[in-house]
Length: 176
Image (cartoon, rainbow, N blue to C red; front, side):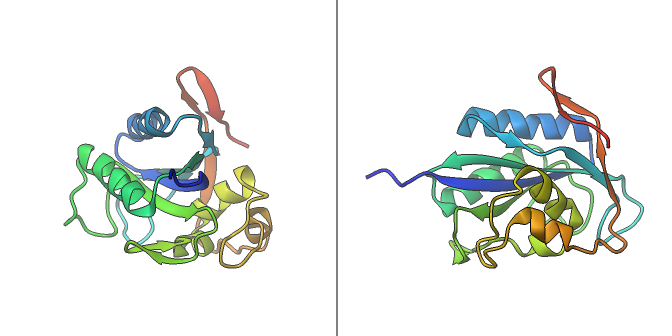
């Protein structure tokens, strides 16, 4: 029996060859999972270290019946194909960083992956794209809509701003 399709939300981040790596990630996701819902692309300053290039961040959503372990393995393999190594420091430059944010209404640890991802509630570069582009979806643990969570969020020192970005000739992001 084929598993039921669930909504999957993945965060994408990069601060090395940003346009290339965002496009590469979107190409790979579309090829593997089909139609994508894509947030605007936001530029933000590095978190957890200084002296690095600014990041591009966005969130992509799609429906899939693939399990958590397979999704996690697929995202890690894509990161490694772009040069990321498991021993790289947690905070530092990234060609490509893919984070499983939510898979349906899963709430807990599944195959070693915490869902929903904790960064949703602490990182503006994750919550703002969710609040704008996936507004009516609900945080699986809190049961609250992402637009409500964003409207109540205090970004503090976390600065981010939308940037112009096109993918395959289609404008997917624009500044305010």
